[in-house]
Image 1 (cartoon, rainbow, N blue to C red):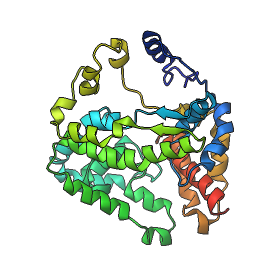
Image 2 (image 1 turned 30 degrees about the vertical axis):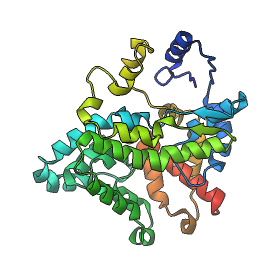
Image 3 (image 1 turned 90 degrees about the vertical axis):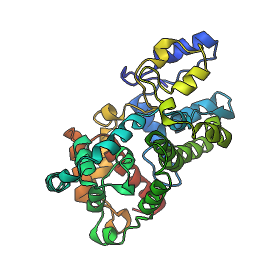
Image 4 (image 1 turned 60 degrees about the horizontal axis):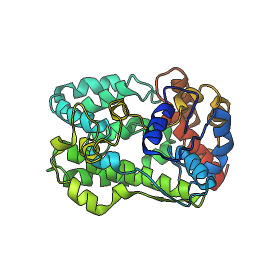
Length: 335
């Protein structure tokens, strides 16, 4: 998938790998207008609202259109072989937090000065110091869209009071079960059970099946996990190589230029597109209001998140998540 945005486009690197291995290389050029046309079908395929999955829908549709019925996906590779930045940042956060107990009262005071819509690195740093996050593990700060206080603020009072926080409770139970693992392997289990299990696998299955494409994920094979997961976390990190165990197992099959560059996730240029070609569509949904009995969201707080994004005080994923949620409710529950 290629874009006009060089920051997100990996065209040059994918072509290099394709040439080296003699692959049949297909490029899908995606523009904002092209994405707008596919959003209704992609959202219509969701059985539950998700901030992710649009990218998978687009590439699955193109793959099926090329005559492929079964495709392989690399899901599970980063979770098992320590490919995400969380494998370095979360252990640091865990160590950092042990020395920050005295800062908790000050952090809580600063947090009250922030607007709920302004969820960003600063607000998450305050939450880390104040121990104000889900699951009793700093890992969840790296993946959460809305901190607990913001989530409560977004909901009308009667919903917030009766909110079901079972997911957070289950996360805390899992954290206790894996406490004896080294920090790197704790992150591996959490990435697999939370991020991959709750979102990536669900979205991939949902979006690929929407176009009758079967996506298989060999990196999730339980035998591979039983072999790799028990290995010491220090073996899975290398200051000079990403996913060193996986990379070394591949030998010299990849050019150094491919694996020595900064890791990029499979994402679209939403940060720019939401300020440009997608702005009208998303803004219209977020600002037009909805039936509060069906929406479960306070209109003033939704608008606050959108304004925070426009002011560059939060990232695209938060207004996009609210847009998807509102669209999903309209389609499946009512206006």
